[in-house]
Length: 270
Image (cartoon, rainbow, N blue to C red; front, side, top):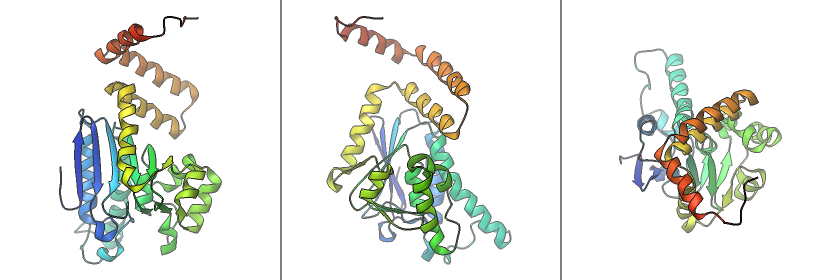
């Protein structure tokens, strides 16, 4: 899959989505927003793709909304008033992070440069973030006279970095450099630029080796629910259901057989 604003390559279960407007630090315009909606919709039933890496072309991950393009693109929702048009556009940007969490594939953000505004939201809606030393993050909405909470930042950030660090980022809109991002848990790892995609690929391959296709999908499903804040009892119900479902697959039977054949003979069940 490829078009002017995003590209997608898939091999052996791993798909790499690249935001492709490098001349604008991969900022989001109308065409990219439409393409991203179509992309995430297609992943819902894509059983050949097991893990997705999202990154940006050039020197940036995603600089958020392309403000320079805004006045030249026309209405997002033709035929309605200006308030309805802006509100529909806002809803459709926010819907992207819903679709990212709804898609069954775990997502790794390969943060190759600035991730600000909506770009920050794409990164924190991912399951894991590996970045380079040039990675920078900001809730830049507040710098435009808006609320600092936008496109899921008020939901994801406190869960990733804690309420105090999230408040600092949201209230100030300041740039958080890679070293600080690693310290507060916003980045899982910092890697060199030439090794970034390989590091993401290695993480994805480990997930795919250790888990069956269904097991990986069910794991993301439960994590989505528990992060939302369900009770322990409901989390256990989901885990119980998913474990029973997974036991009925050929992958699970093969895994149990392989484990039994290769386990340490000195290990004992207790």
